[in-house]
Image (cartoon, rainbow, N blue to C red; front, side, top):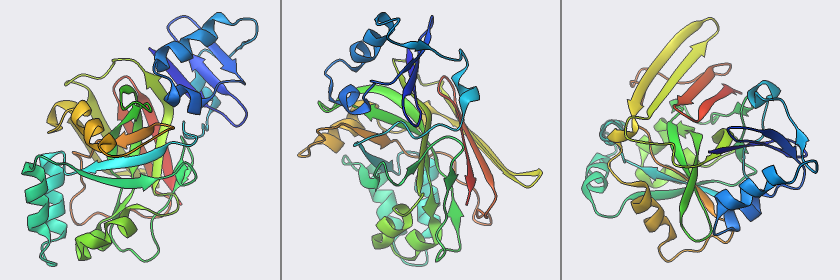
Length: 280
């Protein structure tokens, strides 16, 4: 397992024995490699070219999102809870039936989510739209996929979403999902097979000094395999710099909850750490 933290001018890499700071590390070359684990591992053999770093990198926060030229995409309705929530929010517009169909369909729902410019990192601020009245974070296990379409790593994702805009009309999905500060990933990119069916995904939202929402689920609740989702994303498509793919959410707050400026969102995934963001 190798963890990659992205700083302003360099990256911090950590394996079971070393934590090093590397100025020459390229996230694009990592995603372009046919052997991303090998590309990252070579830097641990380059001492003293690489400088030692704090053995607990999370203390050096905030971190930038571990992304360069990669696109971020997302899968929808991959959990039964997500299916139910989407049907509820679209009931008045008559669009709820579509979410039931896509949950059962062979082809998953995939949509573009963000560029690196729109993505935020650990302890950075995420945004809610000024023209939305119902907003939620969506905690998601996120796949790192190289340019050949192979899943090689994982990170934590926060798919910020306007439920009021999407619920008004499913065709408004891009406006509900894609906007300034609508996405956060981090705190690191983790290379290795560390995710299994028992892996827990948890979220806590605090407002001032009070907890206003919490929930958890397990990777076992995802309907589709990672390889299936990656395969559909790369079908008739090209990602020369690789891509991130959020795998959907199984934790959706009740309809009476909406985010507010100043709320603090904490997402934890077993083995990947904690991603924290404040709502701008």
